[in-house]
Structures are given as structure tokens and as C-alpha cells.
Length: 456
Image (cartoon, rainbow, N blue to C red; front, top):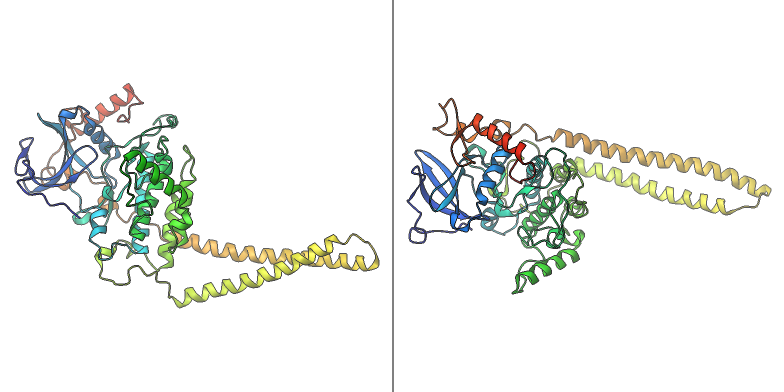
């Protein structure tokens, strides 16, 4: 649930940041700072504050990463600056986090359809940032948020305080794996390899998504609520339980596609290119089986009043008849195939070439031909089913549904930026740049040092 902060609790409430942004209320805590809603004229933003006393200056790195990622399902940034006490990142104000929404649901669980919709969007977002050589390293429900206003139906990812590059942006070579590292991220959702102290890569972000989705479906993960005092012991215990909990056990009672997702992401190699399309298709198959179309894709559990949200609806007559048809033929083919396979094996054992054996041998070839025809028939039915699914998945293409909103710069969405010929963008190097100047700075920095995590 969203925490309530009173004026007495936080002295920043009502104060002005950078002589421009009035602090309205505290929204929560990020990886390395506090987050507030702020107001400038008639526009509302989010402000992330990092104390300068810590001497880390990690917020600047986060600002660079968010600017580089360019706002596709990532909150757009307006400015980065600092005053005497804080480093300050001003960015687009988003809606509630999935954790807040989840906690507000009556039964503290989400429906299969809703989780599948979120799963598709999570994989889409990670595919985008991974293609830009970045891994997030702190995938959890608190860091996935819904948009506001016209963007309220879309899912966004925020808090890039722990994000970093996982490969060279020029050669695409992965940075080498290091063992015995301290955990970066949140233990509850972290991958088994991350808990085991291995350098993270794309596989770890994707595996964490699987645990987030199962958390929404189950209401609680098997390794939650452990009574272990020492942090290191707790991490080790969580890792052991995750290892012992098979994908079948974790996803028991839910569509097999969730099991396939967890299984696949757990088995990815450190440098392996994930099959993002296949992962998205797993969730699309769930939605297709439950008659979800593109038209009602962006309707979630919290948008409707339905007591049977957690029931999978497959009571479609034509769909049931189609399943019965294939089940019947597959059953007959399997039985017939086994009979003829046994005959072939029996005849093949007979090595005596008597007159009886010659007749048996003739039966052998006739049986083998018939067996081959049965195998071909089975293959045709399987291909027919696969092609039908492929066609449905192709028709369920979500690309372009949100093009009207996704690529607009935040300055184009505010009164301040509407009439500016040169829009001011984040002053990630300590002072305000125009768009052209900032791009030149980023390119220059990129040439100077390819290996630093905030250089792109």
C-alpha cells in the first residue's frame, strides 16, 4: 500500500527544488534516494533526490541511462541538476506501481489473463533495453508502474539505479563473468545465478520476471517469510529453496506456458541471446485460449468488477469440439501406431527364411508402409495445429497499438515545452543543454570511453 507521509515527517514538503519545483508529497524510496511528486506551474513531475553527502553520485548515471533509453515504456526525464544538499532528477510522473495495485486487490491475487498481459509487456520492455546493451538488475513489482492519463493502460519500468551495461555497444562482446559477487537487486525475485554470486546478464532480468508473475498468480512465493536473522544466511536460504522448487512445482495449477517460461529462462546461458518472441508468444497463447483479443488487451483486473477473475474461461463450444476432434484422432493414431510398431518388431526378430517366413516378411513390408502412412498423418495433424496457432499469434500482433503515445518527449506533453523551438533536455553533465548540444556531449563521451556503464 502507498505510504502516507505527513508534513511533520518530511521537512521537504512544501519546499522548492531548484527554485522551480514545489514538493507536494513523498511517493517512496528508490535504490539510492527518495522520490517525491513536485509541481511546476500547472504541471506535475516526479523528483528523485540523492543525498550529496553519500559521495556516490549514482543518480547522474541513472539520468544518463534513462535519457539514452529514450522514453519507450521508460519514464521520460526532464532535467538533472544539483543543489547544496541533493542531486536531483526531474522526470515524468507515473501512476501506481504493480505492488501497490496488487496489495489493493481484494484477494491479493491476479487473474491468469491479467498476468499474461503484464508478462507480454514486461518482456517487450526488457527486449528493448537489452537491445540497447543495458540490464536492469532490480526487477520487482515496485519498479513496474502504470502510466497516467492517456498512458494509464501501459506498463512502464523505472528505477535504473542498479542498471548497467552488460556488453560492449560496438563489438557486442559480453563483459566477462565474475564469480563470488555480492547480490545486486532484490533477493525475493533475483535469479538463482545472481543469488549464487555470478555476474548478471539478460537471462537474470528475464528469470526475475517469471518470479514476479508467479507472485501475482500465487499471492506468495515459496521462499517468502523466512525467519533468518543474518542477511547472508537469508540469501543463501532463498537460493536453496529456489533451486529445490522446480518450475513444475512453482507453476502447478496454472497454464503450462508459465512453467515453460520459468524453465526456459532458468536454463539460459550467460551470453545466450534470449528468444523474446517465443517468450511473448507463450503469454499470447494463454490469452488466445481465453478469447482475449487486441480490443480488450488493455483491460486489467483493477479496471473491472469480476468475482471470477481467477477462473480460466475456455467454455467455447467450437474450441471444445476442435480439441475433441484432435484428441480422438491422436488417440486412434497412437493405438494403431503402437500395434504396427509391435508387429514390425516381432517380424524383424524372425530370421528364418522358410516359406512361412517369406510370407511374414511380405507382411513386414506392408505393415511398415502402413506405419509410415500413419506417421505422416499424425505429422499433418500436428503441423495443422501448429500453423493454426502461428496464424493466431500473427494476428495477435500488439505492435503499433500504442504508437500514438510512446515516443513523445515529455517536453511536448507539458505547457512549458509546447512553444519552445529548442527544447531543453536533461542537464546530465551539470548544466542545461539544448537537444543538439546534449547529443553532441553524449557522442563525445561515447568516443572517449566505451566501457563506462553510463556511456553509450
